[in-house]
Length: 147
Image 1 (cartoon, rainbow, N blue to C red):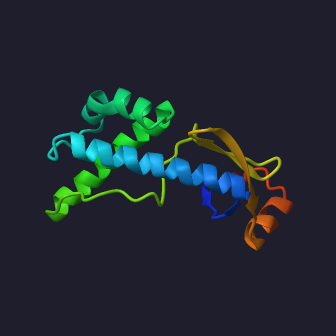
Image 2 (cartoon, rainbow, N blue to C red):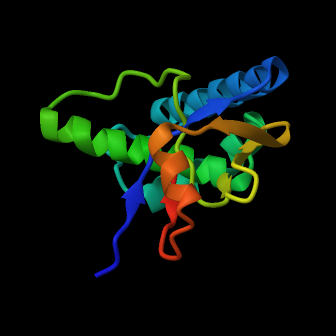
């Protein structure tokens, strides 16, 4: 059985990168809110939501393709949870964004991440904790980190 280690690291963006990331988070949240407000609240199917809103949110909020799809997926997932709890989805705050392998890439050779923003890709440095530093110094052949 393959072992997967999950290690939490801290991003160290420059002040300029912080601004790009904040604008991106706001656009992502705005897209989620648009999707939530402009589709039937009972609709929870991600593919159906994407087909109804993809072009609009991609163009209106200047999102790259994967961000637009991830915004629809977030609305879909939140609606499913809200449905189980018997509550509506209220709104989305610009505090986080769903990323996939194309939006977020770990660059182990220099311990940075490459993040997609609405203004292009940004390479952001990481702060490695003691545990990760020890694991990587051992140069274990089967070690693979996931951020």
